[in-house]
Image: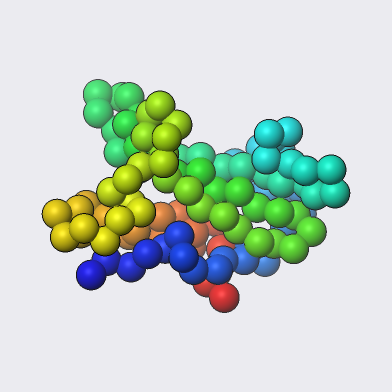
Length: 112
């Protein structure tokens, strides 16, 4: 069975503005609350002819380093195959997990 990355807890060790900007994160008002400062990073998981079909979004809370990772289709709906354990999607999910873990490593995000 493929791992459910979305159930794990992740932290980013360096949450300084300069580091986040260098990694490609952007401040976004939609993911920032009144008492928090959150930055968002998106990257394509599946592309077809230069069009992103499946996108991973990583949100980091600067004060705690807490990381939330979500996967969406191009209509910005949660991408069902990533969130299910249905055996038909297992191989597809494993490939997405590998790509996300690679990006986590590049960004300095660790599983706690």
